[in-house]
Image (cartoon, rainbow, N blue to C red; front, top):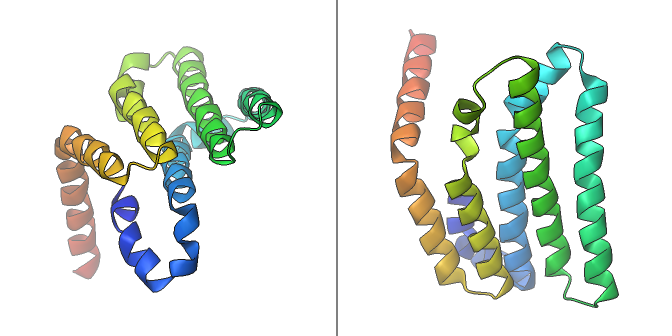
Length: 169
């Protein structure tokens, strides 16, 4: 999210990339979604569940592909193709959380806290704001997410600080 806020600086330095600003915002959101899946992917790999994870991954690619096909057939702007990848990614993370919580008898509600429905809805609102080129609305939604996740961000910062202090000693 910080990288999205800092995009105006990037476009001052590299003005030729300004036309892709909104697509880049959506792709950065997609990266956040896939980064959220890291723990679940690692767990599946560690437990040698490659096939099950591949099925979930292929399902998300299929969803994204079908959405892309509909977008192309209706000759919608290319930014909607970028949106379809994020929607496929959201399907992937939700399916992976559901699979790992059932397979390992984990608390699914607890696992979804990192990417709960409020954050996912916010991502969708950010994408729609980007599609309609409302950068100010993108920033408002990002700030709302940061405020909503403030406690988690502070906890993470404190854990990182402790880790770096221990390594320095």
